Image (cartoon, rainbow, N blue to C red; front, top):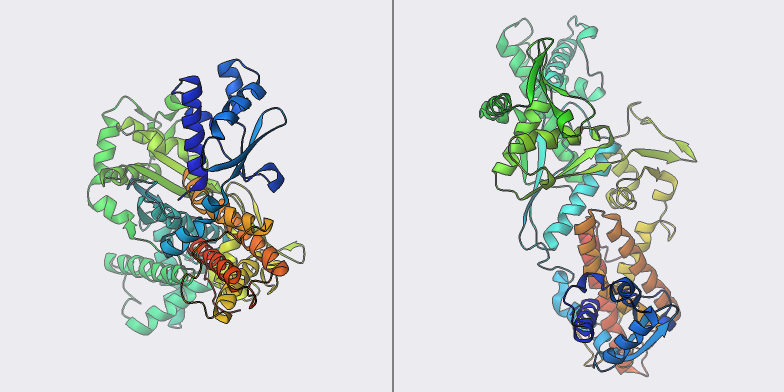
Length: 547
């Protein structure tokens, strides 16, 4: 049961009956007023209908009011201001939500909204040449949480990590590892050939030296070059996977760029683009005419030295995504990729694909703040702060929540001082404590299953507000699916915790002298607990039984 959805359908039906018009459905919206004196729910549909019907909104509101009052779902209808319709619903209809939540359990809030639409979401996709840092951390938390919600709401989701294991950065990694390998064996090495100076490359080189000894020390063959590129990529990717596992970020598939080349898909895309009218040669390079599609300049596919730019294999990779049967593609890209979106869409359009089915979430910059100052380097290593270091410092739950607490398109200041607090000032602690508190109340009462047969005793304003917000859970999840903004869910969870704490601080839940009311309240607490757990699961945050 979704009471808001029922009210929307009731209003749509009412409008059709009064005005004999089947095209007004999109104008119906229902909200929960901030103050209960303005009703349990409210709609501004009368004002939205004014232009269409050419009537005074108060006249429209009164016409709708008369019809709505005939419904068993409605207790009272009031007109306010210029034409707001405030709805006071049948309390039994409102509180019956408790039964729905308890019976649904860990499925509460889920739906078939996605109708099994196939969507591939690519996120993180960091080059396997070093550790994952804060920018990756934000994209990882966002991508993982978003895909959890999409799955929960009925989408067929594939979570993919694109491994850039071809190209110049892998050459640099291989050379860096080889020089560090020589250093690990106590031999002379060329510091100028070490493009990646991080401590992690040194450690990997030591690991290789322990395993293979001096096998490659005086080997200048292609096999040696290939070995250090291959083993370097594997070891770095294994390390990345371990950090993602710590961070509770999962992928269904790791797609290798080398495999895209080996399959002949890059060569085929190059051939198809050449056969189109949108490529041309200039200064020894092959260009794609992206300006024909709104780009600010044309883009190089093959450089004058014969090497490919990133664009060509990326177009081939995204063509492959569609060819694997996915209806929609979503890429979670860093802010530095903002200008890349147009040229990717252009390449796909030239190849005959609908570019509107490729969408992007651009992750904005993160600043790590401590004592009001930006923290740029790790105190331990002197390098950029990694996901692992951040999780060791503030915990996985806090890191994940903070990164999805603001819209992904906004810059984020990550407040380390706040993140380290084990108090209600920390929003993660506050939400988890609400869940643990629910659990404690139920355990104290010896609660094992649903107790009340009706909820007529739940009449306090804070009880009604709590129940109504529980009823908003599915709508919040669907809003995340539509907008791709996970912070809607983190805000929802915080408000649910807020409503619960406020209610519990003022209300005696377990009353030995009124067991019937106690049972009703305990069921409501259980519904709150279930909803909190499901919200936290979608955010990849632990629902702690005890704190």
